[in-house]
Image (cartoon, rainbow, N blue to C red; front, side, top):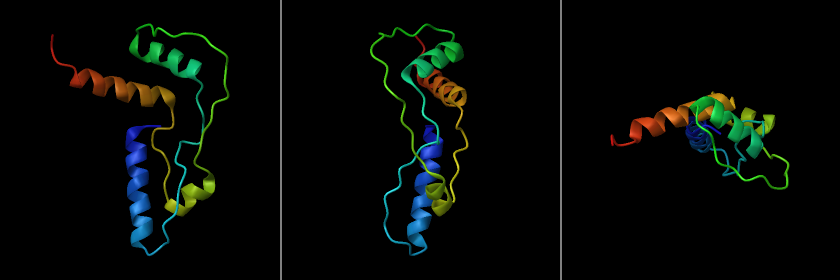
Length: 100
């Protein structure tokens, strides 16, 4: 999940409370799970660098954010695409790296 989407969802949750709604737990996510293999492959594609990974028994991806939760909060992720999530993280990381 993109960090900006998570921040936006928290603002929506605060708005929810400010409107007098009861405190509630929301399971946030972009509605689609990504396997570790997908994340590794996409990271390699986006960054152009190999990712050292160890293969092990596959597990099922998990995801969250039901349509009902999105409707209650009035929230939709702006960056559900894994390529965008990794590209934005890569740009941020490179901007934060000290010149060596």
